[in-house]
Length: 167
Image (cartoon, rainbow, N blue to C red; front, side, top):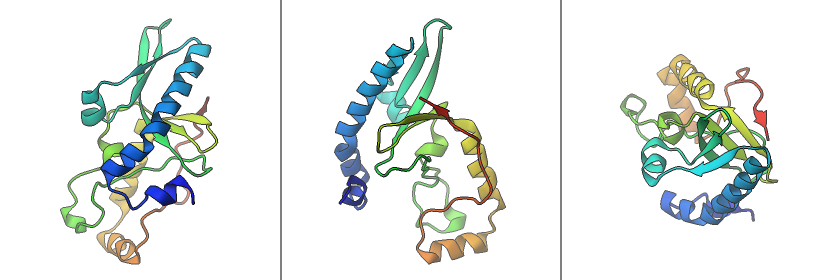
């Protein structure tokens, strides 16, 4: 059984606790990699993590710029990005008020680490814009049918935000 299967039924707090050692190891790998290419890594503050959904920063000291990153860990070998759009999928369509971490977060980049350790950066805004524009096109009836199907994941066919930046 892989980690994803082991943790998928845990509460959010239990999942975060289970993933902490992996997150810490990945942050150390990113620090080493960024340093090797002349960049710096900076952890986000607890407030930034909780309120703004920012995990760390990629800092370019030569240009005096930094980019906020929300890290994502894939436990299977996929090279894509998963997003939680709504924090509670099981509320009526018309009552959905709260978008989830990936939509409300203020990170400029999504940093995805796949199961073999490959790291990719995606610009966050085009992904958020694509998700929100796709949602705006979905009639309530379609959403209700999708919800009744029990399926929790979907990919909008034919829509892409382009190639990620590879590291």
